[in-house]
Image (cartoon, rainbow, N blue to C red; front, side, top):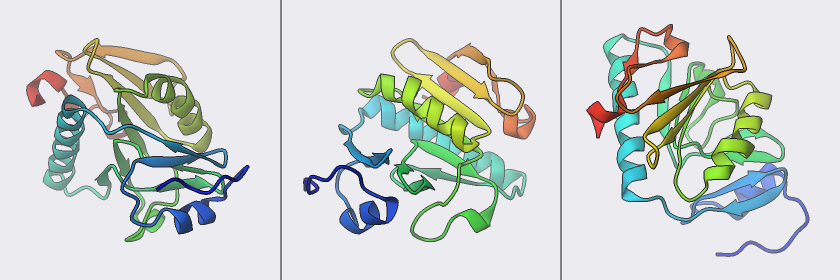
Length: 180
């Protein structure tokens, strides 16, 4: 359902206009952005990452909670995003409807919105305090990892690499090719 034309929406207006939306939409600087449906490869990788992270957290009786898209994250009054996979370590920052903070860790799997994840979301996540950001590129079998707590530089891994998770001090390593 197309939204009525308006110059800029607030997060609260966006939530009121998109309850139970059947399309993947986000709010960026007050503008509603619609995305195409993800590919099967995209869903396979995102689902596998979510499962791997969830098993690690449960196996270690961790406090953090993993989530998978679609679930709204209100970053501020004009930005609502839906990362493919994300982890929040403070339960006071989410309720049964949505999350109200920058996640500790966001993962985006590239598909049709490459520049959005590589440029726009990188900047948005860094600005709002995401601790770690992974960009998984199935086309080139690479994972770009930003661990903002330690550096603004990125690390690049192949799908055959053991990729250490920064928010877990490298105790969790993920190899994409072992999951797909």
